[in-house]
Length: 218
Ligand code: GRF
Image 1 (cartoon, rainbow, N blue to C red):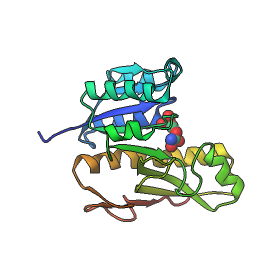
Image 2: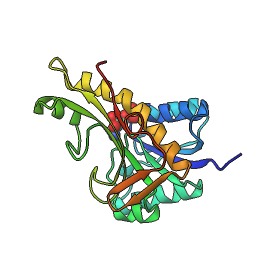
Image 3: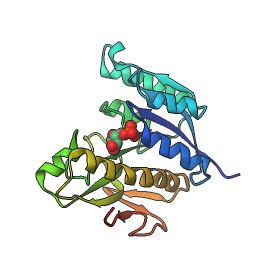
């Protein structure tokens, strides 16, 4: 069997992206395995999902560390102990500093529920609705020192309807999140992803169905 990419998934909450990745791995669509799930929130529902999938999970509660660096040091230790090759942020609500990123250079990915560089930060589905944009979506990107700022690997676009609220748009975007995140992990596992400066090239991926999904009316 070819090499399975060793993942560590970092969460803070619901964990629906974690679940989508677990499901695609189980379906044989993603050649990876999740070695450990780490949550900074002891009550994160995603911890139950990990348990349901027989995946070890660890809580690293940032409140118990005296500094961001000490918190990150512990994260690094756990991820290294498990032999993690790719760190997957899936609703992880702590900003990672260069201290952490140096331990996993270009080996940390994130999903964000907007079309970056529009609407970085929090509460962005509601912000997109209130701003009046006609399209929004989600972005999978490598993590660098900026917030929601690293090189973009894939994006999916969804329409924003006049009747939308932040919640209805979030739901529509989330369905696309669950499609593109596992795909990106599969590409990385196949060694098809190359980064040149800010630009990310995915060998052999389809534009329109893979790299830049456009979801018609739902
Ligand atoms: C998602 O909307 C993701 O884009 C954002 O946080 C949310 C996490 O949801 N970064 P879940 O915990 O994966 O269900």
